View 1 (tube, protein in one colour):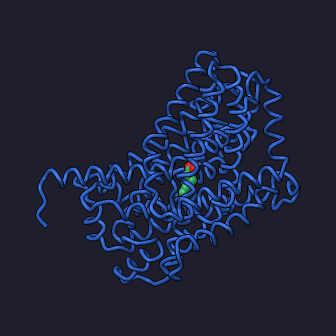
View 2 (cartoon, rainbow, N blue to C red; view 1 turned 90 degrees about the vertical axis):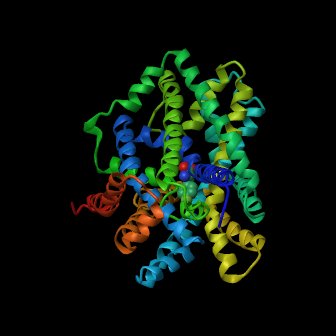
Length: 454
Ligand code: PFF
């Protein structure tokens, strides 16, 4: 179809930007600001960060390109995309299970994601009410303990966040939220930079820097590698079809590699900056870096309680954190909703209400795991820990592994080459070799090591 150069270029540019915004909206979320710092804290800092960065570059990026490629070629929801592409490659119909697993993983992740996003919502109100102003460090610690000890408060915030997610997804493609990503994400980066500035002025910045960037190789063990790998998949939203769905909107001419690098780069920068903002506060106040999921809620309010304009910046920070979580939660529920609408021809509202209601119910397990059920443990893990481990450490990497195998071994090489639009033959070869040999082998080795076979 004849198009003028200008309109073609314009279309291409805006769509590539739309993809980068939507995919970054999914990738940047609680995983960067809440989970990355506490995982780094629990796994000894620098050693974890080094392995995490290697996992992003060597496993995450190649798999992200493969997942986007699947979406762009299949053009539908993950389940249908896998059906179509398996038929095109004359492969087994069982590949559709990859789509199904993604839907189920998203549902499980959202059940606990919504509870943690609820903590952030509660902190918006607490910060705006001035609870942190002039508060001492033990008082701030108490505010967090009080919040998680109360099932009622957690249920209220979890319900509000779930409703927010359902409402947006029920209204269809979330133009409003895409706009929000465009303006609010820079806002979030601004506040994180402000916190880093605060850390520099308080003099403990270098302690944070060296904790995050000086790897102590003696701390590297199987558990650290396993956690870093899981975190790389979680933070990039890989292995469950979210990125595949967004790939469907990417115009044919756009370079998948460049777009993926932009998304992974943004995501990694935000996580590292969050770490740099948090650890100086941890060391300045003699807090425990390995305190787990409460880390940011116990540390950042200390900075907001002392800095000028802390009430304003603190409130704004938690508002932006809620938005970051919101744009991610939408991408978690969208595959299930899309599938229900496709398959059962129900309205979006009905599908959202049903999926959201069910997810909400499962989320109660996470709510109670912080209080009345905290002593119920399976292999030493609470319900929340189990869900987190099952999804981030097992299901997402398994999804990523299958995506790599499908693109590198099952699809026809001409189809992959044609879809990838990578003009540099050497780079294409590198990506292909990584995906064909390195990525699957590395994932198998990590798993075998974890179960004690290697
Ligand atoms: N990447 C999101 C975060 O870092 O908060 C979480 C997430 C969203 C994981 C979507 C998986 C997903 F499909």
